[in-house]
Image 1: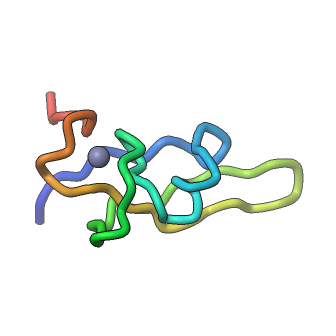
Image 2 (image 1 turned 135 degrees about the horizontal axis):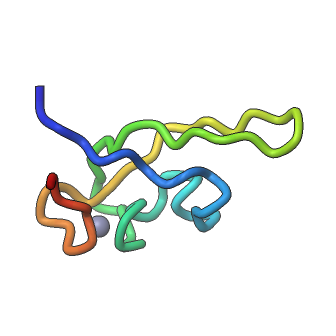
Length: 67
Ligand SMILES: [Zn+2]
């Protein structure tokens, strides 16, 4: 199993990132297809905002690296 950085919470994402249209790390457009970046988890009040998010892949310049 490959290590994946934990995505930011939904409250820190843009609408495009939250909707899966943009890379969750660098905000690049994913119109050519993205890779699963995991699940962004968070709540606003009683509303659960957990959502699947996507990134532009291992080449993403902003993707956090393992430390
Ligand atoms: Zn990216």
